[in-house]
Amino acid sequence: MAFTLHNHFANLGSDFYSVVNPEPLQEPALVHINHRLADDINAETLVAEPEQLLAWGSGAALMPNSEPLAMNYSGHQFGVFNPDIGDGRGLLLGEWQDKQGTLWDLHLKGAGKTPYSRFGDGRAVLRSSLREHLIGEALHALSVPTSRSLCLVASQEQVVREQFETAACIIRVCKSHIRFGSFEQFFHRQQYSQLHTLADYTVSRYLPDLDSRANPYEALLQMAVDGTANMLAHWQAVGFCHGVMNTDNMSIIGDSFDFGPYAFLDDYNPTYICNKTDQQGRYAFHRQPNIGLWNLNALALALSPLLDTDTIKACLMRYEPKLTGTYYRLMARKMGFAEGSSAEQRQDLINRWLALLAEQKLDYHQSFRQLARLHNKEPLNEPLQRLFDTDKGKHWLADYMNVCQNDRLKDKQRVEQMNTTNPLYVARNHLLQQAISSAESGHYDELERLMNVLAQPFCHQQGMEPYTEPPPDNQKGIALSCSS
Ligand code: AMP
Ligand code: MG
Image (cartoon, rainbow, N blue to C red; front, side):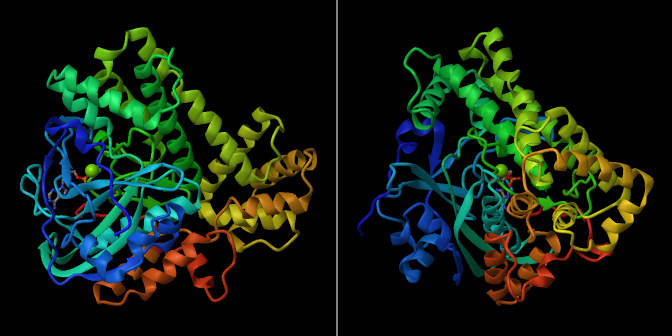
């Protein structure tokens, strides 16, 4: 083999993980190879031989130089601290280096039991693995920072959830598997030397160009604050609900990570809760930005032995302006506003537009696409026409057109901007469900089709019109079980 994995994290030593080998899946089958990701990280050699990839992706064989390990970490789950979480069913296989020298963690999720499995079986079901495999591509295509998945492997191995299901694996790829909870565990156990070591490792890996005069731990917390704010701004703009924003599921660099019962909005309902077990709505769509800050506070506490209080406060104060600045910039693009038009006026129009969508229960994604049609003088769909027949709608439309007419974009440029920002195809749950049902009966073509559609979410694709439609009313805004 022409490549070898790196093991920088493994070199930190046994305080940071347990060495575990994967338990091979029984009767595995390669469902999907993510060639787009392989191209992006120059990992063509990893996916070139399907038989070989199947062996790696099912845990039957190890990649050259792989030293698999289960990482340890704590975390706040639904606001409650759990000191002992750790990788209960996934293993860090090692790091892959691309041509630019960037290191990518390869992580086999669903790889069997580890010392952190507690009562779990160490497996992940096909349903949730398919969802994680797909969402990485869907978010990536919308420019949302995210982990991705290199391949999906199914099996005949039965596992028990609410019913019998089959086990599967993915090879998750992202720059970091260090979580807020990775730091929380050492703070909780007063293991300050390990806390330092983990912080130093994180700085050296993710902030290699840091000025030698800068305070590295301040830079680390700033990175987490800025990254989280940026991620949250993107989630809110694209209408994505993560569902389980526990601090063990928060990546230190601000990648969308560890997906469970996630969902995209259908109708614009800001109080939407996608996770059936989240009865209090802690992770409801409109609460996500606040929870991001709550989680950062938990991280800041864990880093408090390394930083003074004023520095911590200053870092946390960056969150709100960074989040709102990025959010309104993204939303302004969606609305078709030129950069530089009056910020206050634009924010007011954006907020009033969202209030109208909520009141009229309109589809979040289609409504933006329809708005672009307005500038092309094309007829609108019935729901939007209805909105603009109301007094409030008329009033808003007049103000909106007024702002558009006074900025420097030509209609053609405006439509172009809107139609390359607002997706025509969205990874809605009812579409995912079709791909899951087919895959559960051994047919993988629907997954392939959906992944191809979602990889190019902005352009019309011949024959794919049904994929642009929202679900029927009875399938809208459902909450999913978090069993996975
Ligand atoms: P999650 O909600 O997927 O982030 O998982 C929370 C914790 O539970 C992590 O430590 C997982 O590794 C662990 N876990 C979830 N499902 C299983 C399972 N089937 N077997 C073992 N551990 C699991
Ligand atoms: Mg997790």
